[in-house]
Image 1 (cartoon, one colour):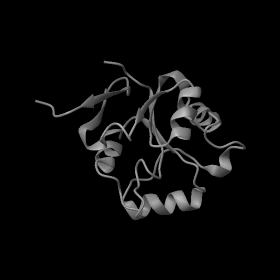
Image 2 (tube, one colour; image 1 turned 180 degrees about the horizontal axis):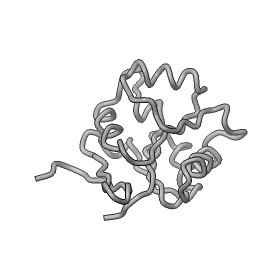
Image 3 (cartoon, one colour; image 1 turned 45 degrees about the vertical axis):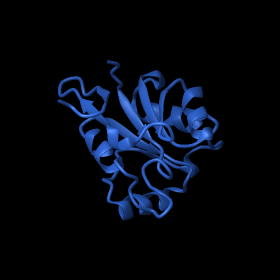
Image 4 (cartoon, one colour; image 1 turned 60 degrees about the vertical axis):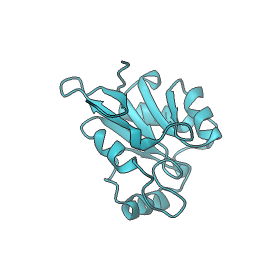
Length: 144
């Protein structure tokens, strides 16, 4: 099982649906990252992104990279590279949850592993944080 130093989430379409509500399984997935390095990487302006997070009931992220933080938006990898740098981790040690073709391309171009949420239901996923190393691993399905 691969361990990651950080997890990054796209916002609109990944964590928050078209109605502005938390996507199914998204709150639990974000909560399972608690205690580890994580953040939001979005093409939304920061003000809108924060409003969406509050409306949907998400905790304040330790890091948010928004539209105004980079000169080139997705599919440029700039936003994901900046997120890794600000978290103090290598890009190759990050796991990304994305829902768009441009977002997936941006994360992959940054050298990150990607979960395309168009192909994997968030409700069947959870992150496990090692209490000592703070590294994350992705688990699928029910634990038994």
